[in-house]
Image (cartoon, rainbow, N blue to C red):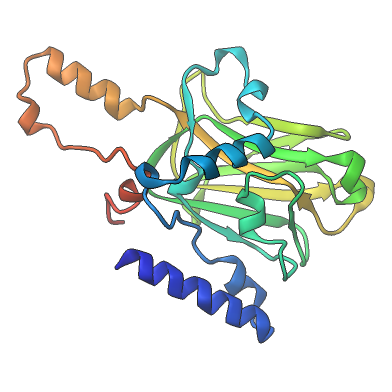
Length: 243
């Protein structure tokens, strides 16, 4: 049932683009995996990995075990240029594609998780040599329980960046916990108006605080049947809680 609903949403998006519908509606379509991780064609995965720049090499040495949690969230753009410059390009494993904004600053990317989530890093792939004035020079990262309840934000400056830019949102080495992460692009190089981001990832710990708590409970002799089960598939985890 879920797969058919997603497919219908994609069809509506294509029809909206063809008819020149509201850009914001097109950009806010939820990006979700169409098939379970367990049945993904391995040849497709390997071809994507070959075309992707290894983001893990950009992480600090104390990052520990991490995983990409981008597909667990609903992504919304403040604006985007139509015909191939939106969410799919931003999340595609291909740095030759990119999101291009098409509206007033600040340009925003809102990432909403279905449950409170451990977040360690936000990664942006930027290329000043190619994008020049479209390249962000200042961004602010906000975390919160909803888009109406965000923190003051972490401001980060870039100077002609090329490659993966890592924004560490941890506190004393511990991941932040939030329902929502929002990126604000407040300034571009050379006072450019619109922005290009070629890839974007949200990274969390491979072992969450919940996993650690479960192990602690088991060590004290608590019956495992009294501990709620968790999903291992990001597709199923998306529906594991209701807000």
